[in-house]
Length: 381
Image 1 (cartoon, rainbow, N blue to C red):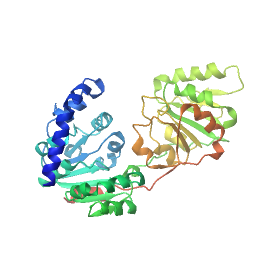
Image 2: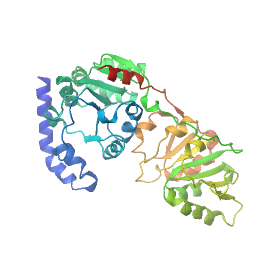
Image 3: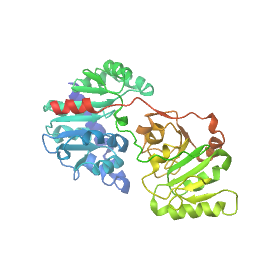
Image 4: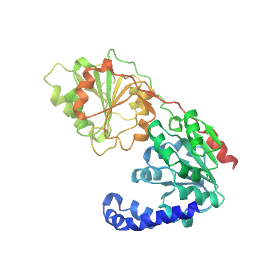
């Protein structure tokens, strides 16, 4: 009975939303996603008897890589919700789809070996449709944070119905386990946060320079200018690592024009492979993690402009840097949730932060996780 009324409600909402969806689909940003999700355009069902993973956006999709590395790529189906998730998914596996809206799922979902759903993607018809056709249903990296807990509890009646159709849950912590049980989840195993299952590795050991080392990592156009305006020698040594190699000359010229007639020393790393100058333009690829290992502060690029959506904070936090980013981190929100003590600031606050480095807390990672129990469960099906 619950399933019937839920479907009618979803159908009603869909019919009401059709004019809006048609209007939004004219926007280039949504011209592929909306027709796929809401009108099944170029979005056929997955082949049967594969291992079907479902995630939301880029961060959640990236976190599945350690699992995919242990499976046959040809056996993996992967569905997502967002444009960035679809782009990331397409770089990892062959069979990728946008997840259709719920009213289509009873007809779209074919029997799979397993449905593995990431975190909070609790779509009722997704689990019901898979469970009812004999697919094993698994929720992984499950968590309910303090901020969301009351909201979940308000709709506990709904989640109790949903969790009747979930065979196995892999939770991040004991607290998450207790909260999930309140919502009706059973067969819960605690394995930590799988986004931290694959941690950064140093490929080369650099000698750390004396004093404070401030690294501006993966910076984009206009971010170097912002950082140079906020920085001075008293704060520490500055290592500039542009995101795109085609901008190396541009960033060097920016530094040269600013400091050529001053006492600030600078050089390109490719020409003198050390960090002895006040400002070093790191114009080589593949060294950022090694540089984070000798840094004290990381100004994480991509967050101080509107379009990039931030960059991975796990890498600098792993080395206990003070992590500072702008507020535009829409592509990396799920990874920032794995980090303790970071700073998201307005652009005009950067100088104040750099002038008061000694008062800032070092970042650290939350509890690391393992994907091995997930892999074992899947392989035993």
